[in-house]
Image 1 (cartoon, rainbow, N blue to C red):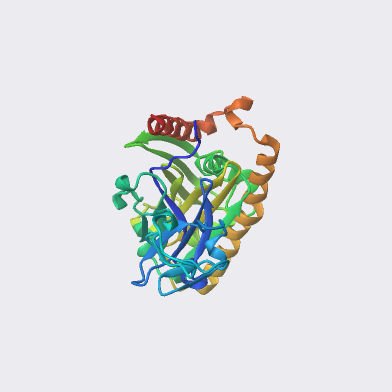
Image 2 (cartoon, rainbow, N blue to C red; image 1 turned 90 degrees about the vertical axis):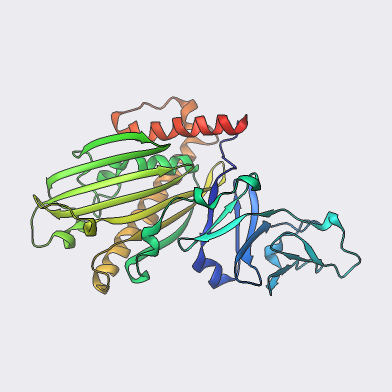
Length: 338
């Protein structure tokens, strides 16, 4: 059975990536995909492969909503229709696969399964991104040589922060009160640390208090989009909605052992504090790029081409949320396979 769902929305990239480069070329669940803007400005996505000699269309040029193959000059619209053949008539054989595409929450989403089932309402609600000015965001696209499920496990079990991110955001998760549950097909995990010494990344939010109450919650949406909310307030103070910072962790599988990891960290406070933005940007990049990514890639090398579950890993209580996610995914994959 495939480890990838098809009838779901996958993030192909950020809108800014598309606007800066004029295209997004990525392999998603083994399929080469090219995203570009149609003549009306909306995004379109097609298979990144010319039907003539199978050259990647992303190696050509894009103008006025048409991608022209750089090898022999055939042109295609975002609908997959061949609109230019310098060598003869346009036949039905020249039509290429096109995929439903939606631009939402400053991201580009593609659907590689049954187009009739591509309901935009199935895209997770990430309205916190739209409501946050870019000055209060940290946005990353981080290719990672690891199975997307290992990356999901990493976010659903945040106890690793105390060891892998000890100098930035760790130090409170192992002792925090932990709960997890399944709700409407989503898996929700919560960590509640009371009267704790805040890690360095949290200290500006509670200064001058010495101790803090820090709350963290992760909500998993199939197949691999996770919304992480966290707040830090002086110990004993009631948390308010304006205290919560939301971050998207979204894993788009490239292959069985490689993943496109998309991150967007937002905050509703200190919106114009450039010094805090610089500090947070540095801390998050250190945590994700310099700490998480190398460890996950080493983990994948250790596992090789095996499925981690086939190697019988020892499970601990901290794995409860990740196990719930894997069970939900197994049920969804089985249902789709039928």
